Amino acid sequence: MKIFNFIPNFLTLSNLFFGCVAVVYGVMGDLEKLALFVSLGIICDFFDGFFARLLKVDSKLGVQLDSLSDLVTFGLTSSIVMLNLIGSSSFVIDNSSNFIISLLPVSAFLITIASSYRLAKFNLISVSETNFSGLPTPANAILIVFLPQFIERFQLELFFENIVVLMILVLISSYLLISNHKMFSLKISNLKLSQNKAIYILFFSSVILLIYFGLASFTLIIILYIVLNLLRAIV
Picture: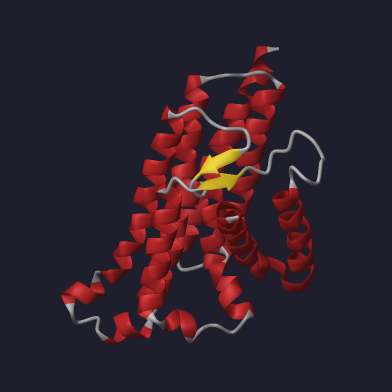
């Protein structure tokens, strides 16, 4: 039935809806609920592709909707989290009368710009089944939106109070999004250890981290993902 062909687009639009709600909570400063709705968006983002392949729906409209939804749910929300963190740093608060320094929080939107560039580039190139070029926007969102839980769990408030640390994080995040570094996809065509070693390491490490650190582990998992890819490039 043709109605089933709309399932992928429905999930994509649901992703966008959850992203919009996450933005609202982020603007209000509720980063915990922002992370919750971004997580719901990630689930929708996964299943829209799953059902598109299952139903063999290849829609140019769906591709564009997916990118636009991802820009809001993963790109804009990540910037809003960093906007909050930079804006609440003691350096910005203590120097709020300085116009230039008061503008520092808006530098967080570099992540949105980089996400937009990445998604546009992604639509124009052939997609590899085994590798991504640069850090995928959902992975970058997980890295950033769960950062407050990571900071609280490991009591890193003083470290992330440093404006230099926060600005470097924005730059690294933006760079990884638009870089050409090869990063392995989690799609596997077989279960051979020799061909999927990095995926198995990431999977079992993620389970252990989730058990011990809960939500705070999501940031650690993406850091591990990045490190594994860097080591793979070196070796």
